[in-house]
Image (cartoon, rainbow, N blue to C red; front, side, top):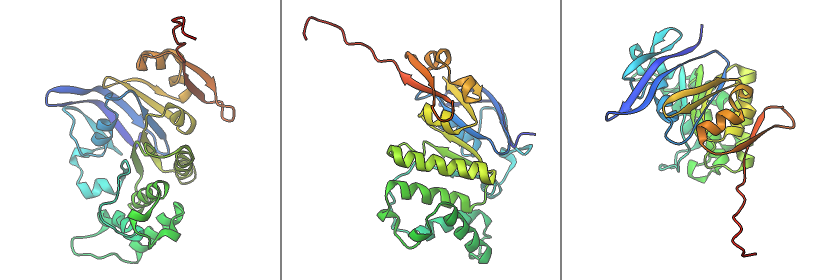
Length: 267
């Protein structure tokens, strides 16, 4: 049985449809990439899975239980979210931020115990930020900041990790570092990952499945080789592309076709 089941979800903002009849399942250990044009409903779908929004129709189940029936703390023990990175407003230390991930496991008047500190240290070790423990968040580079956000999520000890455009503000080196870390957490530790990204090629390279959204509906879902085709990508994004194979993995790789400039006689 799927660890996560999205069943005929529809959602609208102020009467404007955003998602319509979305359905798919996620198996334990999947690395699912959610891609699609701007406004196709990717981030809204992520918020529905996290329980921040409630669907107009349909249901979302975790291990067979509707998430609308789950308490927020119980849901946070299963699903952790890594948001788009934003500048830190308060100068917390890295250690303090990662320890915040233990909040769902604490009672009303309970302080962090040995198990919480061990989970925090384990999360920092997995993300290779132990040496940053006492550094203030506003003193981190973009790549370091992202690793802290993942460590905070891992400290929750979740079964599913949700990410919304995690590499939007990173250069190519830090994009690769970030997705290599996700791949390691997914492959070596069995963490289920669902990531929203605009980068088709990153999704194709790292995800074992891709869901392509268009105008609030799933246009295609499956292995990258089945989803990332010229016919499908051109139909969804409305622009001509070329598809070749990544030289190392054989996964499909997308390149936009260059439009030749018109010749007006000016050379």
